[in-house]
Each structure stands twice: as C-alpha cells, then as structure tokens.
Image (cartoon, rainbow, N blue to C red; front, side):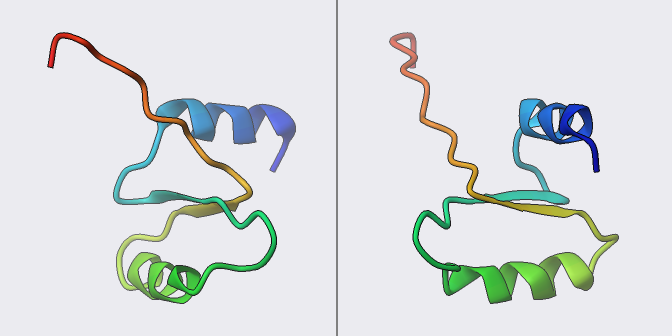
Length: 60
C-alpha cells in the first residue's frame, strides 16, 4: 500500500470495510473482533494508529 492509497482510505472514513484503531501504545483488544468481522465479510482494511477527531457541527 502506498502513502497515497492510505491517504485515500483515511479520507473515505470508516465504513463496513474500513476500520481505524487508535493503537497509541499497544494493540487494542477490540482489534481481534474487528479482524474476525472483516474476515467474515468481503474483506477490508484495518489501519492502526489512526484516530479521527469528532467534528463539531452546531446545526445538529
């Protein structure tokens, strides 16, 4: 995977086949469930070390 590929995936955001895990200091326990979930569907990507900050939307 190239840097450009990774940036495109991050820009798409999470969905059924893309999952981001913070994983700052160690592999999160939830990674194992995510691996199984993605493996049992059509596959996808799990990116470790990615954390998207919530965006404030005052209209909600």
